[in-house]
Amino acid sequence: MPGMRRALSCSLGFALLALASGCGQPRTPAAPSVQTVPADKALVLSGRSTSVFHFCSCAYAKDIPPREQLGYASPDDAERAGKIPCTHCKPRDAYAEYLRSRDEEPAAPAPPVEGPR
Ligand SMILES: [Zn+2]
Image (cartoon, rainbow, N blue to C red; front, side, top):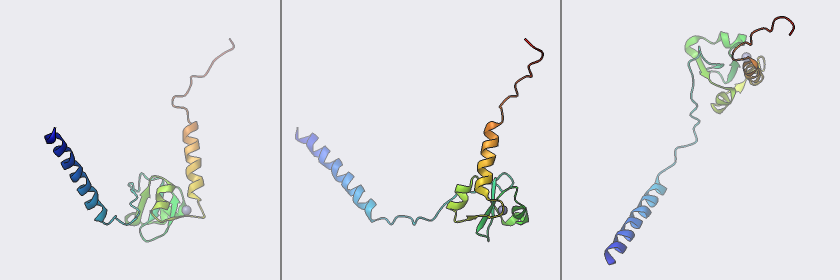
């Protein structure tokens, strides 16, 4: 069927065209686009003009003025944004510790068993 063959080669041509035009487009540079979270809910904090990040309980984190604060959901996010961990609070360790304690917490406390069976 000649009509069908023509349709097929036509769609192939379109696919090639789409590929070719896609090749010429410059890729966006690998600028880290790390999502920040509201500083009052963040576990990891940094300042806009500082390169160090802290765990939220760190004394230095509390020194960051509120309008300067940048919050991250995890130390990984902060590092992707180019921040380095504070040597005082060791946010990676503190975060791991936080995750551990959160996992160990029972969802619902078991009722105490009273008396011998
Ligand atoms: Zn710190």
